[in-house]
Amino acid sequence: MKKKKLLFITPVNPLAKSRGRNLRAYSWVHHLIKKYEVTILCTSVSGEFYQTDEKKQVSDIPVHSYRKKLGFLRRIFNLLLLKPTAWNSVTGSFKKWIVQEKIGQYDVILCFRHVNIPAGFFLLKHLNCSELWLDLDEVDSEVKRQISTLQFRNGDIRQAMRMRLESQLYRVQEWLNLNRFQKIFVTTAAEKQKLRKMYGIEKSEIFENKLSVHRTDCKNPGRPFRFLFVGNSGYYPNFDAISFIADEVIPSVREKTTIPFKCTILGGGDSNKLLEKVRSANEMEYIYDLDDLTELYDNTDAVLIPLRAGGGSSFKLIEAMSFSKPVVATPVGVRGFNLNPGQEVLIGTTADELAEQCCKLMENRDLFRKLSLNGQKWFIEHNSFEPVF
Image (cartoon, rainbow, N blue to C red; front, side):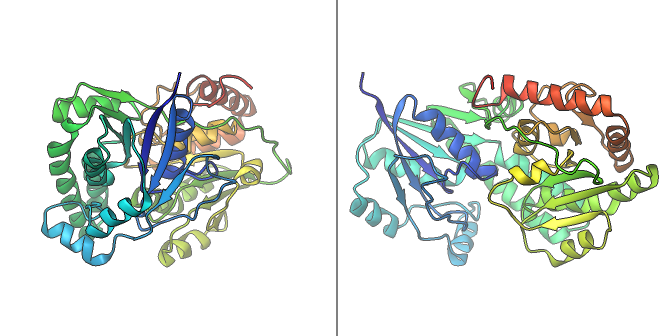
């Protein structure tokens, strides 16, 4: 039987060796090629266009890349029209490019993320397509509202006010557009419930984040116990988490134990203030970015996820469990997952609670082994590409 044709519209390239949106996009394509003949249309809405790398990207799939970034003036114009700043409105140059590119005909169009909704609606008509789907991942307006609340709490008033405005703009667009899709996908049951409660949407489906299972060896067993946090500091919840680790969690761990320990931050971003804060602590080190995290996880004992805002489900958690690393997290850090505290993960809300859990993990090898094994077992059953090794 001939496969149906599907056009996957995404603001970022689907990359197997990446994180966040790029990795979720890859998960989607990895899933879709089993049932559909997939073509990727990659826009650069987010201002972070990645060159196509055939070694990292899903192979043998046509990729059309629209390289015109969303500029400052376009973002200001979006605000004047009461739209989110990253809203990818269909311009004359985009229409011309579509005609020149000869995209073809498709049975289904899947918009990856909210910002590409205008392109999805335009192509639905232009290509005479029958179905339009949306991978929302998380309810953007609600996540941005949470971030705004966190920024207000941290005293970042200007950022908080801008984020609160973005939240309201996304809320308007969600109200106008979400009911126009045949299918909407989110990552968790909690996000599905939000859609039902906020917009009366009953047709949403869950598409979970997926990763491959990894085998790692703990290198240099005589070295200090090493914690790891992974997250681009350009995203405010990650920026806050790194500051929280440096300002409160690490000092509390230092007071509670005599066991040598280190904490590595894989952070990206360009905040000099944050870099100085991290590098001023003897127990902390900062790495800007890595293409392959295998060696980093080989030299890691446990993962910290002290997030205080966010939506959907966290790649940080399933990535840690895919490498069989115990996790110490806040409730927000394990959002969207049905995990048993003390069995598959350690939970703390305050800095002292997180520090206590870190100390337990360093001092109790039986607990360490139990969390390592149970965490990866849970991951294999729920969030891995492969059901077994």
